[in-house]
Each structure stands twice: as structure tokens, then as C-alpha cells.
Image 1 (cartoon, one colour):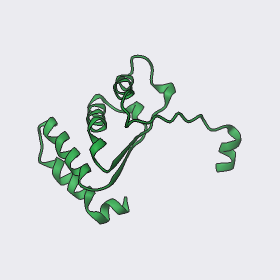
Image 2 (tube, rainbow, N blue to C red):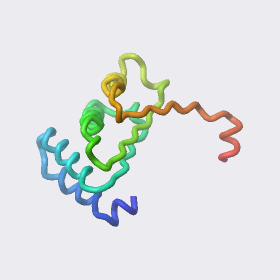
Image 3 (cartoon, rainbow, N blue to C red):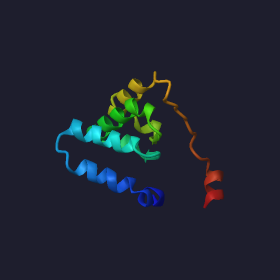
Image 4 (tube, one colour):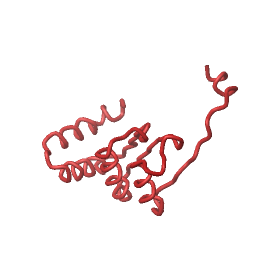
Length: 116
């Protein structure tokens, strides 16, 4: 966060999105801002995301290949059933050579004790 704030990217992004009522214009403004500076964007617990959030994440994931941006999405497999909206986005992105999926196992009780 400090790097984003120091470089002004976060403020530029907020300013770019603030003036756009039209969703597609806002998505394009977001894409343009993310492509403007090297960025790592992390969205955690995407299994709880609403349709609008999944729409913007899908839009970005399909178009960030030409930018210096790493988009990281985290979600719990056990929360994403067959009818879950995230399932469709994951299926759409599965064939992209730019998408990498890392399945992480749950921490064991012993591993949790070590961390605590």
C-alpha cells in the first residue's frame, strides 16, 4: 500500500473512476490506470464477490496481459459450488495462457499451532 500511495497510482485510480457513471467507461478507466504503472492487485475471498465485482475482475483478467500488472484472486474451493457465479468466471479464464491456478491445501492443526 505504501508504494502505491507514494507513486500516486492509488489516487490516480480513484480519480479516474470517480468521474465515470457508465460501467464500461469506468472499466476502461480502471484498465488504463492499472496499465499506467507496475501494479500487484490482490482480491481476497472472491467467493463472496457480487456479480458486479466478478464482471470487473473478468474484464481485467482478459485484458491485463499487455500491462505490467499482476492480478491475484483468492477464493475457497469449498465455497464455490457448481452454480456459483465465480465458477463461470473461472471456466472462462481457464484456457488463457496467462492464467495460473494454484490450489493450496488447508493448513493442518499442527501448522496452525506453529503459526500461533
